Length: 176
Image (cartoon, rainbow, N blue to C red; front, top):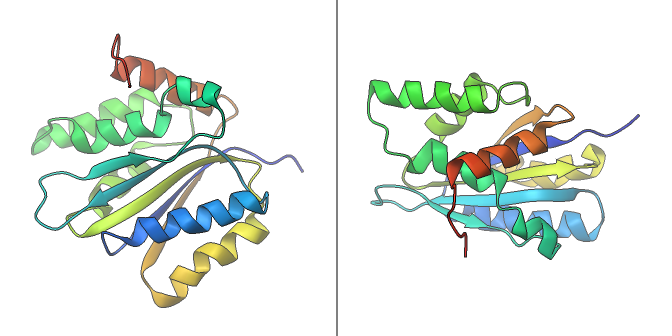
């Protein structure tokens, strides 16, 4: 059976949890259990007005040059100026931009509402993920109760749709 591209979100109940997830992800890459297309961490320290988004290194310069699809997604969800009722409109607008990718407004709303000061997340856009190997790595945290998983299987053209979001999010900007 052909493996599909997936978006996995590891939600941690501490601001430093995503750092542990990043270590686990690197272990999975070394075991060739997952092929990471893009990955970002979201760290929201207590008292901060917004989370900090960190981009994990790409394995190739070509991938890095394309920009971060997940960075644009997270930026649109958490760093765009939306307040009150406008937040729902912002999520609906973002869902429209990624419509057909496998990421819907319910997934985006759950992600947005799951993060608050004192929490963190690791978002991984991956191809060729061997879930029989990946799942036990994640479940180490699940057993402690400090991580919750969100997962979406993406359509075949989803990475391109997400990269189009990057282009829409930063026209003319130099990501350096």
